[in-house]
Image (cartoon, rainbow, N blue to C red):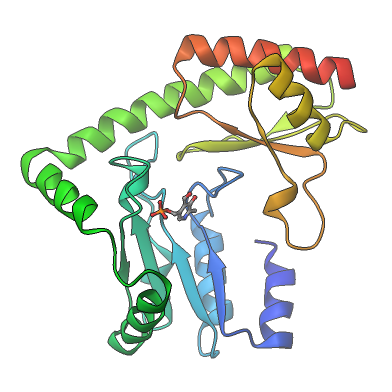
Length: 243
Ligand SMILES: Cc1ncc(COP(=O)(O)O)c(C=O)c1O
């Protein structure tokens, strides 16, 4: 986050909680530096604001090295969660949460009201998977593949897209954001892209109060290298037509 804006929001509004994704954020793929982690913790320390640290992508760093969580700098005020959807199977929708006991009790009440309980069948499948497979080896394998896909996508963006296109450079995760040349609308790229058989997510739904009109989210985990190359050529054609 922009630390000055963040500090002024925390001081001015005393929010109940701040939700952040320090590792390979969705949609940008950005990761907080160690300095930012400390600064966020220092700004929140001693306030009534809880930091909700969504760590869905923390295990998917391409270099295989986990980054220390913000929770380490702010242990009493941080709730941290992760998801097996990103490291075992996307439809699983089973995750974990680590929080002080009184906060967990509140989560239980809210979750019961929302879905009664997590799907039993998926929990049994996940339990069996974890008991019979080496999850760390699997995560290391897929992270390395995602790293190759990400580099390929970055290189193709640099080579094929018209001038004015920029993109983030993720260190992990599944997504990156590309900013389009001036005047090219992300919604139009989305619509035209579908006709060309290439799907991107416009940036608009990722903002609560306007923004994202000129950004698109790209996924590099689902497709193989040939499909990525074909998809980037198609996307570049669409953006060039609209630029
Ligand atoms: C940052 C982030 N957190 C959490 C989730 C949700 O994961 P789950 O599949 O466990 O609901 C997602 C999934 O899309 C995500 O991108």
